Each structure stands twice: as structure tokens, then as C-alpha cells.
Amino acid sequence: MSKTSRPSSDSFWRCERCNTPNPIASYLTNCLGCGAARDSFIESRTEPTETPAPTPGVTQQIRRRRMRLLATTIVYSAAVFLASTMVRIVGDSWLPSLLLLLSPRWLFLLPAPFLLFWAWRLKRVPVAAMLVVDVLFVLGPLMGFGVPWGRLDPVQLDGPVIRVMTFNRGAGKVDVPRLSRYVERHKIDVICFQDFAADPALDAYFDGERWYHDATRSVVSRFPIVEELPRPVEHNLDKNRYTLTAFRVRVKPPNGSDFVVASIQLPTMRHGLNRLFQGNVEGFRTQAEWWSQEFTRLVDIVTEPRPTPVIVGGDFNMPIESNAMYSLIDNGMFISAFEQAGLGWGYTRPSSFSWVRIDHILCSPDCDVRQCWIGPSFNSDHKSVIAEVALPASNPDADAPAQPAQP
Image (cartoon, rainbow, N blue to C red; front, side, top):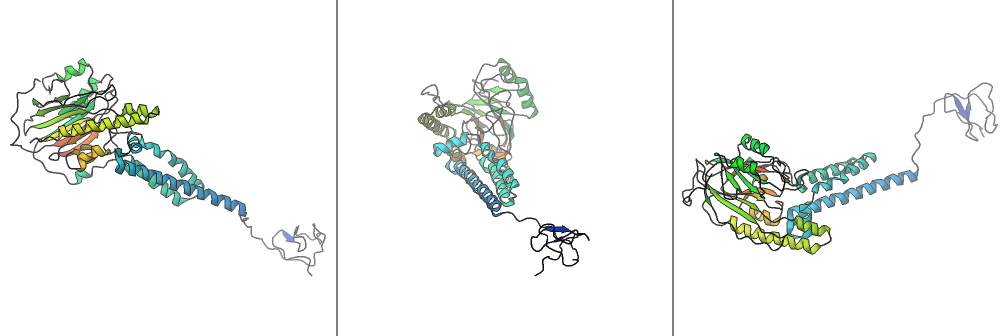
């Protein structure tokens, strides 16, 4: 039996008995490992270097990591889909869904960077692609990213085009110089104010000859205010469940028929959220029911039969995805200006780091919203909302104007 095998390298030959590699040299006639004799000269050749195959244990460990990554990604995708369904379909009809409406939905983005890094480390391209789709879904439908699809089929109206702003002044001191410059630069025609605090500088600006206002300065207009409509009965159950406010006027533009402007403010859900964080679920439910009751009263007020177009601006204290809010749009009673012609998320509250849009401009369906965007906060805790609205050309059945309000 041969004691050596054919050499497999330019620099050594391998012993058949003990598999020891031996240098090729004339003075080495025996194996250095076991001493077996080398029978004859063996031509050398190169032995290809082989990558050692992974051990079964390592393979199973990688497979388990990939399975955990896939399972985690599936759970994350399901959570994103469920949250979007709750926001878009369930709305405020279920308390957990209502809480989601009022919460920062960008929180759903937080797991994505870690999962993407995990997928990159394990070289799982399909899983990474799934995560990218999830991120886009969060940024889009879940967070309420708006695209002005309504402008693809614009309505041609021959009436005046006006710009309306709604702005909750908040409890702070409004930056009046900045507000006035913004109003002049963007040619704002009508402003709906909410929350009232003494501000002589702001009152002085709107007391000028170019502006008209109602008795409470809730609505200011460059056009004459020809009538102040009756205010709804206000009632407060307690310090947290306060009444809605609605200030309505009829405005007469110089080159068209009159239209109604309403500045409204609904009860806040902040008190209910504070109770929920204290463990008082029933308190949160009670506050939500109070908001719903007041919203029902508001609908009766702003939808009462009138022959003129209606523009409603205000702090609704609820996102547009609310079932109650969306019912006005879905039933064709009103158009949401930002949903019609806005681009982006359109968040208005809180102003420093916004995560929810609770300030809205609504228009009756005989109007056409040309543009809508979110303006500055001017030191308030709310950002402003501005819409450019085209009105019908004429309205011969409109009520006869009353005595104009004092400018």
C-alpha cells in the first residue's frame, strides 16, 4: 500500500498515513509527522483554498435571527394597518380610537429605524422593502398627509375670490406686528378669531378704517359686515365642560352677493385627556360625550337654511377624521378646505411641535376652495389656517341686508 499521496501544493506534499503536509526538499525523504518514507518524487501542484463551510450551529442561529426579524416586521405592519383602520374607519366611535386620533401618530415611526438596521445586518432585502412600505403608510394615511386631489377638477365660479383665516389667539401675547404684516402680504380678507384676551395692540390694528368687525371682534373683514346673526344659547355644565361659541355675520363683498362667516370654538378634549392620564377613564368618556353634544348643536346652527354661501372657521378641538366631523363632509353639507386643497399634514396644535390638526375651515358646497395652507402661530399655541375661496357670482334670493356694523 502506498504510504504517501500525490502532492497538492507547490510547496508541500501530504502524507497518506497521517495527512501531514511536508516541505518539498531533496533532503526530506520521510514524513515529518509519522516518519513514513517518501517512495518517489511527486510533482507539486497548487491546492485550491476552500472557504470552510459554516457549522450547522451557526446556520441555525442565522436562520432563527431572520425568523425573529420577519415575525417582528409582520407584527409592526399589522399594528400600522390596524391604527390606520381605526383612524380612517372607526374614528371617534370607540374610545381607544378617539385617543389615537388625539395622539401624535408619528410615534409609529420609532420602531422603523431599528428594524431597518436589523434587516440590513441580516441582508434581508424583502423585509427591508416591507418596512419601507410601512414607513410610507405611516407618513401618508396614518398621519393624515393631504394631497390636493380636489384641485384636479376645479369648479369655475364667477364670483369674488376671498382669503379667509382662522386663528385661535390662545392665552399668550399675540405678535401683532408679525400678524399684520402677514395679513397684508397674503391679502387676507376675513379673519375668524377664537379665544379672547385683552390686546390693545391687536384691537388698534383692526379698528382702522380698512376693517369691519362684529361686536366681539370674533370676525373681522375688509368688506362691510351687514348683519350680526343671533348667537346660540350658551350653557356650561362645569369648569371643564364649557359651551360652544359661535359668532356669525353676513358679509357683503363689493363685486358679489353676500355670504355668512361663522367663527366657532368647541369644547376642548384636553380636560378629558388629563383625566385619562390620571386613570379616570369615565372622565375621558364624559368629556367626549360633551363634545359630541355640542357638535350636534353646532351642526344645527351652521346648516340652518340660508340662501347665501357659508364659511366656517374655528377651533373644533377634534381632527377631521372624527366621525362627527367627517359626517359634514361625507354627507355633502360642507367642504373641508385643507382636505380639498391642502398639501402636507396640516397640523395646527400645539404650535411648537404640532401633531394634530384641530383648526379647520369649512365651506358650503356652492363654494370652491382654490388653496389652503397652514400659517404661523404668531406666539399662540395654535397655528393659523388660511384658505382661498371662490364664491358664486350672484344670489338674488339673499336676505335684504340689515344696517351695517360699525367699522
